[in-house]
Length: 107
Image 1 (cartoon, rainbow, N blue to C red):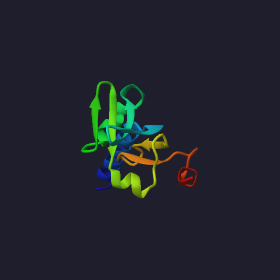
Image 2 (cartoon, rainbow, N blue to C red):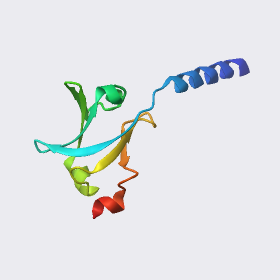
Image 3 (cartoon, one colour):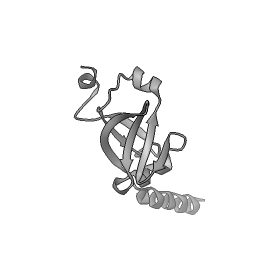
Image 4 (cartoon, rainbow, N blue to C red):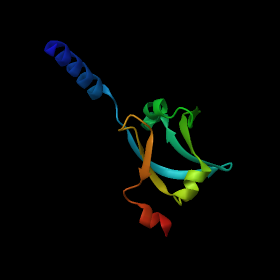
């Protein structure tokens, strides 16, 4: 039993290390009435695409991730505001940019 647990643990560690984590900072854009983060595939959009089911689509060489209007309003986001997106948790996640936190964004 102990041997099996060790084998499973080692396999999970190998899979975890192989996982590619991407952190990208970019502006929020409003295009045709939709709030979008546009991430080029060649700078990590190809990796993030796997975590954006239902909210993202690939158009040309760009991953477009749409943020719901209600979320943008609740967080008081503005066009051009910089956001940090990543997949460190295994899910598509966006956060305030370190250079442009919530206090700066609200002004």
